[in-house]
Image 1: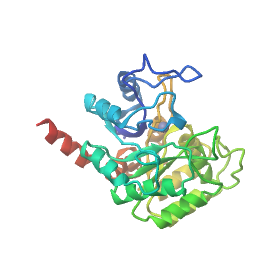
Image 2: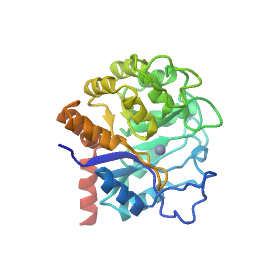
Image 3: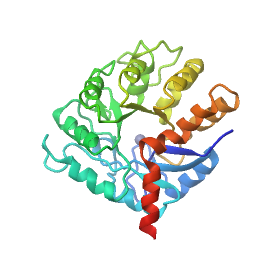
Image 4: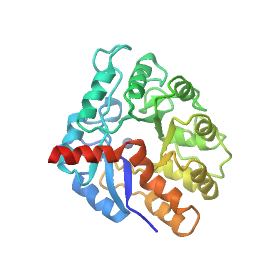
Length: 307
Ligand SMILES: [Zn+2]
C-alpha cells in the first residue's frame, strides 16, 4: 500500500517570472507548479531549502523568503534555514547558534542545503556545522568534488573529511546528498565518475562503512544522484534500504518546472511488489523525516501560532 510522501528537498520561488534565468533558461518552479507535481507523484508536502549561497545561484534566495513561502502555503511546505560560513563576521568564531535559534523560532526544521564551495573541514565550515549540532538542527549537505566549476562542501574520494567531522561532532546530524555522496555507495569511485551517475553492480563502498560506523549520518535520496544509486543495482538497493531504514529519506530536489522524478513511483513499485517491507517504505517515505526534523513539533507550533 502506498502512502503520501514528505519531500525533504525542494526549491521554489514566489518570483518565477522575474527571477534571473540560468544560462540554460531554467528557473525555479512556483508553489502552484509544485502542487501539481506533488499530486501526480503522491507527495503530501515538502521542505523548502533556500539558496543562500551564490555558488549555486543565479538569484540568491533569503531565509526570510523561504519562511514567507512556507507560511503562505502552509498546507504544502515546511522550511529549512540556510547559512554560509562567511555570514556574520566572515570569521571562524561567528556565533551561528544566534542565527539558527532565531530561525528556529520562526519554524525552521533544519539547516541547508549547504552549497558553498569550501572544504567540509575548513575551520569556517566546521564552525557552522558545530553550531548546527549545538542547536540540534540537522545539516543537509551537497558534497562537491573540488573547488570551482561546481558547488557544495568539498571532500575527497572516500569522503575522509566527512568522516572526520562525523567523528568529531557526534551531536551533529548530517544528511548527505549529491553525486559525490552517492557515488560512494560502491567502490571504484574515480575523479571522473564521482560527480556523475556511475552505473553497474554495486560492491559495498565507503558510504555503507560510514553509515555503519556513525549513527549521525543520514541520506537524502533526492535528485538523479539518489535515484541512480538505487536503480543501478536494485537488489543491492533493497538490502541497503533494509539495513539503513532509519537513516534514509525521500526527496525530489525539484529545481525547475519541467523536472521529472522517478524515485517516488520506483519506491511505490518496490513496496507493491514486495521488494521492500511496508515498514521500510513508510520510514523512508515519511516517518524518518517526521522523526529527524521533528515535524510533529513544528506542526503543533504552527497550529498554536494560528490560534
Ligand atoms: Zn537542491
